[in-house]
Every structure is written in C-alpha cells, then in structure tokens.
Length: 141
Image 1 (cartoon, rainbow, N blue to C red):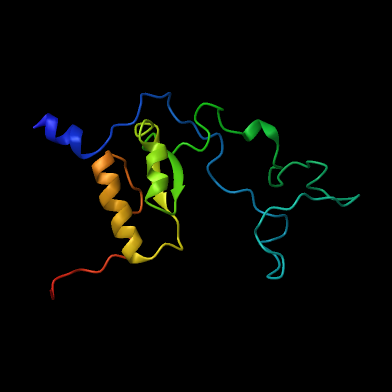
Image 2 (cartoon, one colour; image 1 turned 30 degrees about the horizontal axis):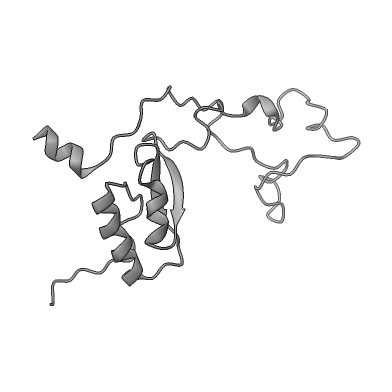
C-alpha cells in the first residue's frame, strides 16, 4: 500500500518549519478613511506624517525585519516551490527536482494542452498544483 502512495505523489524534501513574522497585510495609511485611497501599501513621505515618524498607535511601517527566512522564502505550505509551466516540454526541467518543485500550469494554457501536461506530469511523478483547472467532466461521451 505504501509503494502505491509513493508512486502517486512525490513527497517534499525535509525542510525547516515555515515561520511568518507578520501574517496580516500592511495597509496604506488612511485607506480605511477614504475610498479613493486604496489599501495597497505606499510608503508615507509627508514631512509632517505621523505614521512616517512612527507615532504610538499608528500602523506599522514595512521594513526589512519582516522578511521571511531565506531557506523558506517563497515555499508553499506543503514544502514545494512553484514552477510555472506553459508547455509539456518544460516539465522535463523538473524531472530530477520533483521533490523540491511543483508545477503550476500558466493561466493562458488551453484545456487541451493542460490535459497533456497533467498526463505527462503523472508519468514523471511531478506534482501539479492546479491540475484540475479548466477541465470539463466527460460524462456525456
């Protein structure tokens, strides 16, 4: 039974625990007060800005200390890194790295090509993150 499971899906390499220092987003100053000020982060640059001067009670500023550990940066919760794939041929790059990288099919790939990529990935024992996307059920055939 364990042999079948090993052949089905690759197991990620052992890695250190992924620690996120700050899980909630940095929001732009006054984005909660005005509709025209969007939430996407912008550094406050005003000469009198309370937030830039780091007054007590204001939202935190983005700085390098919030960065992730270099060893786990961009790592998915499952332990894989993403690798975007557009063609079947690009899967061959992941042949020896199937325990470190998982394939993600690009958004602009057609359903027909997606099917081919998923089939080839199964042969090469490569994990596909979005393998079920754009697939129709074939019940009426």
